Length: 334
Image (cartoon, rainbow, N blue to C red; front, side):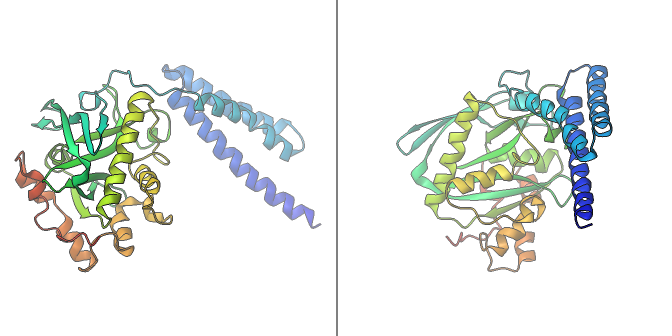
């Protein structure tokens, strides 16, 4: 009598796992399988039918559920072996990969993006080679960009140098021509991971002036030495991706979880928090941890950190970075 409830619970739990696994596998075949939708759909449907048949025909039922996972395992082995690439027909804004060369404290970065935009899709391409002195890193800032939902934002890290230079890096999907971003496709092997190394006027101005996004900017309270180490860690990854591409994943390898990985590498990461996934609340998390200015009430700080209108007013001006920081607290508190 005692074993029966336990068996029922085990059966229910395993049933949920099997249904979720089969659904994931069918979607993987649909998105990442043959380009011909008819074939991909037939494979996805066939997998679902095969798993259902195994679960029904094999006895006892618990054993049937376990056997029903066999097609899922086959799909998972195939899926993990799909190779990413750096040689596709990319959209012009992600056509080139950056690369950093270190010489003591100086770093030279090839393919820094500094486009001149007339609209989101109409622009002059400018890929530049820039040199920065790592000894002059003053700190690191964080942009939160909202395109619609307030629970989710796009995050951009940007480094400030004491000579007035800024360098922004945005972790994004690398899209092919004719391809657009899909939140569902982002969970599958549809997009390569891409680090946009760019001028702030490019990355931020594109969002505020042409995409209609709301952008907030926060100075992060970390020592300059840690900010420098974080930049080096980013650039090391930029070089790795130039040689060994990786897949983007909307859950495990996105703009915020990847930043957290870099922060962990330099010893600047806190405990896990739900706001790392619902990253539209990331500024509240940083405030609660004292990692951004806490001299002001949070709502006042957030209002001052909304740089959308200042970015629009700055336009293509050469002092774009200075103008969008006019209302920010001056002291990093590090």
